[in-house]
Figure (cartoon, rainbow, N blue to C red):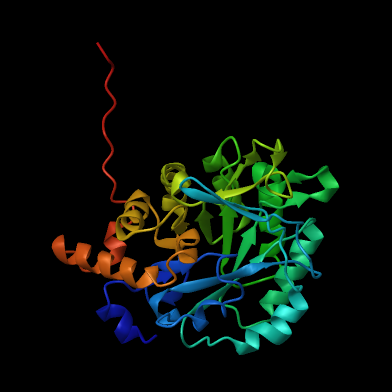
Length: 321
């Protein structure tokens, strides 16, 4: 995308030095390695600012036993288990098939140890991906399976380790399953993250009452979809308070299914907006969201989508009685 196009199009943004054609980002795990939705008639990567590739580990993984996906009221549970072919195959065989002229591509790094995060990040550093997203919600096998993302110390250690082996923009994907997401964000900024993705899925469960068994083969899974949007909005706002003074942008995500949803995330403090679960029932939803944002900008006489970021007006709390 040319600089002239960036100035002309009100949806275009600069995210960590990358030109995004629109503020929409296709979320990791929802579009495979970027090729799944290109087969859908009418879909175009030019409708989105970036595509986050599927979570990638050092070695190939088969993932969890079924069931791995289950629809819930206003959402979806998934426990895929990071099924992927391993970083070498992704870099050597998959990335060369992607059209980097259409959109930006962001790698998603996952691991069970800090050493694995380092190895996978280093491999992606020597590749054409535009940025690297760190999935710190993975369990640390050396610490008894405690998720990196639920402990600020471990989160910062992962970010710092990855920062040392790449100059590409680092986007830290924050978990909502923790006590203080703002403190975690602060520690990650100190460790060298360039941006945040807020939030990852919430942990949940589904039960078959007749058989009295857990529906998901892994017993628990990540909840996404409209059910988590109010939580995601609050987390974005909380992280924005910490990130704003440092100029660290946020991809707000969690239950976006309409232009209004996307606008709310921008107003709460996001610079870009992730679209994920909605793609499963409407692969062309990004076109509709983009048009809705354009209409909003026109109605409110705004020159660019960036003017919405962090424009939330908070109420002044009052004591009752």
